[in-house]
Length: 171
Image (cartoon, rainbow, N blue to C red; front, side, top):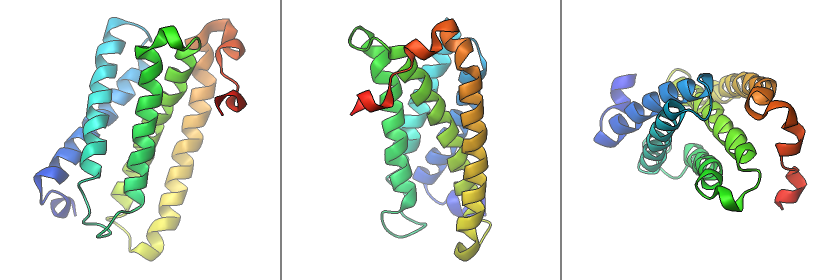
C-alpha cells in the first residue's frame, strides 16, 4: 500500500513533509500563541505545507491527470497565504490576528482531512472511497470547527467579536 506511494522521490518528499506538517501543526495549535516557540514551530509548519503543496502538483499517479487532490492543494495554498500575509503585513491588516487564527487553524484542519482522503483512497475501491472520505472529512471538519470556535476566546481574549472580520466585508 504505502510502497506504491513511495515509488518516487516526489511521493516520498510529499509524505514526509505532510507528516512533519501534521506534527508541527498539532504543536502550533496546542501550544501558547505568540511565543517564540509558537513562531518557530509555525514557520516550520508553513515551510512543510509549502513543500506538501508544491509536491502535490507534481503527483499524477492516482487519477492520471489534474484531480481533486490538486484542487485541495490550491485551497490549502490559499489558506497558508491567507494566514501568513496578514502577519507579515500586519500594519495593513487591523484584524491580522483574526485572519491568522482562522486561516491557519483551518489549514491544520484541512491537512488532517486530507490525511483521511490520502489514506482511505488506498484502502477502498473508488465506488466506496467517496462516501467513506466524505464521512471522515465531515467528522474532521466538524470537530475542527467546534475546537476553533471553542478556543477563539483564549486567543482573542474578551474582545472576540470585535476582532473577527465580518465575512461580507471580505468581498
